Length: 183
Image (cartoon, rainbow, N blue to C red; front, side, top):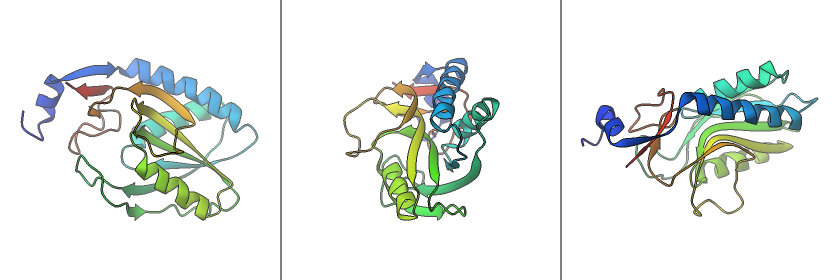
């Protein structure tokens, strides 16, 4: 398999969660989030690029349940197209003031959590009253940054290279409507 061939990757991958299952789990998450934020209007920060498909779907589910959100986004990465992380690079910081606000981060996956840990710390440094994390997927292993966990989780995925529904295969396949894992 070529390092960057999405078609070959799909041939050598297992379907882990289909679109229907993911949408059902996102709707389930939305009920809990709506209940936890009742009476509030949180700052809803999408973590780009991977969090975009999930964050959009979750936002619609929250709106359907009557929770209004103040939208913004951030783009911080440790990967820049690679499969292993390096130092955090900020490409865009949110413009919305966070002081005293409840913040909900929406991201595609919690793997080891280094990027989300740094993002959460930054939000708190900006004066956020609280920062919670909604993640479509959490990778099943014990290597997560100490103290980091997602407050709202859609699905658990195996400790394999996963892609689709926001997660990329060499910057490809983020818009696949399912989650796959390489064999």
